[in-house]
Image (cartoon, rainbow, N blue to C red; front, top):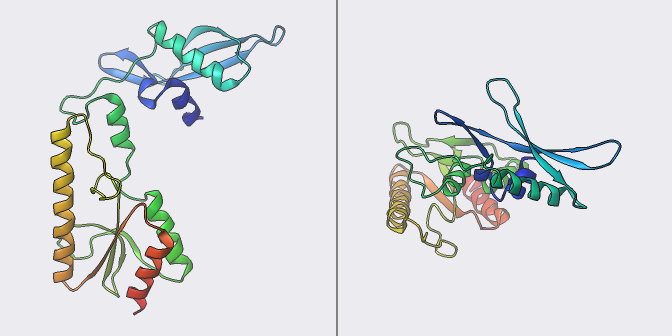
Length: 223
């Protein structure tokens, strides 16, 4: 449902209503079919302090639900009911869309991590997740095998500067170039510190075949 609304509104960041005093609420379009005429009316609905206010948008008459939702969101914007959420002071993002994307990036339990963990678990390996391998060292590995001293990192192609897939941002480029560079430097330092502490480190990119990564990890753990 949320994905359907996001797509129709042309982005999750475009689904807000301004409540005033710096408050915003995420809205959704509701379609109601009149029982006698079969006409379809569109309403904008959101939640505010336990209540569910609505705004009548108008009648839509396309042959698919997706097209009706798209038109309803266009009406909501034309009438000034919908808006983008203002960026908070000090935000690094250059637009609400960029901020929504940044907030959507998980720090753990990403899809590549979960796929790898399932493969490892199916092969009988047990591990810790999102753990500091070395006590006192504030560096977290995605999958940790304390007994075998193996730490696994599944790095995102953008945030860690994958040579094959990283594409520099065209907006606020200097900031992002510096951030990605610092991420790379921190990754290299983390690997060095763990290896000096006796750990073996596996670094995999999110685009790599998880079965191949799993095989490498299993060989290290059981070897």
